[in-house]
Amino acid sequence: MGEVFALEERDGPAVDLSALFLEHHRALYRAALKILGSRERAEDAVQDAYLKVICSACVMKLKQPLAYLFRVVRNLAIDRHRRVAMEQRLFANEEEGVDVPMPMNTPDVIAMGRQDLRRIAQAMAALPARTQHV
Image 1 (cartoon, rainbow, N blue to C red):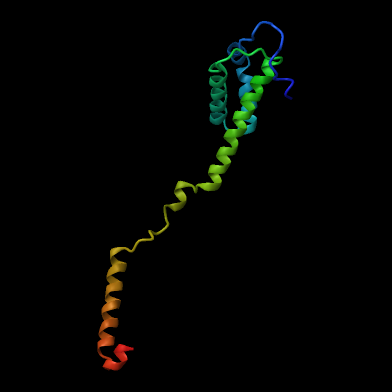
Image 2 (image 1 turned 60 degrees about the vertical axis):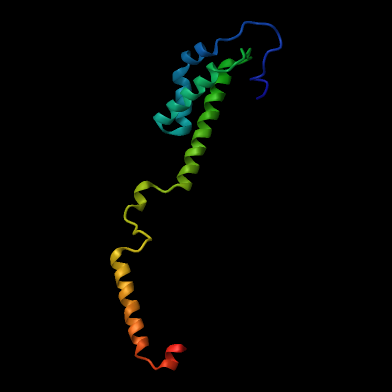
């Protein structure tokens, strides 16, 4: 696999990866779509790959430039897929918490608690002093 993407030692024409990318955009998109299963995420992965390719600072002389482009798209798509899977495991759906009661006390619960405390204090006041102390 390292052989496919190795830079060529000999002098030769550099491949315009941007033009090659645009020429094979649909095939690269389909490769990302197979991994991600979502059109939007696949298009995002392909766009990220394109930006990565055209923003590279060095001009590369690759033995198989098209295979290199597919590898870039594939790696980015796999990274996206893993990130989405991790986020789904870690974060609950927004709507799952809609009907969950708040953990804080509401005003009516606070009022009932205060009434209970008053009744307990009244009951204790009616007890003999020694029992109150205990």
